[in-house]
Image (spheres, rainbow, N blue to C red):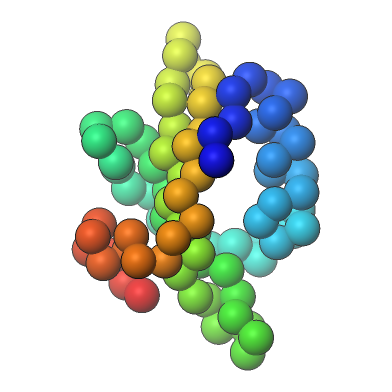
Length: 83
């Protein structure tokens, strides 16, 4: 998935993942291909954090211009992140 522009990014963060309940998501800063990124853990059925995926940010003029989302828990091993 890719989101470009302020409105698209706001709409994305207001609805997915976790139906907009961002307080349920644990994030850890990382980098992907030299760009800033976050790894996201979502609560599983027991409430424990489970790997969800990565979001990679393109920065333009000091602002987030694009979010590329990779909802793939298998990426955590590639980036050396805890599963």
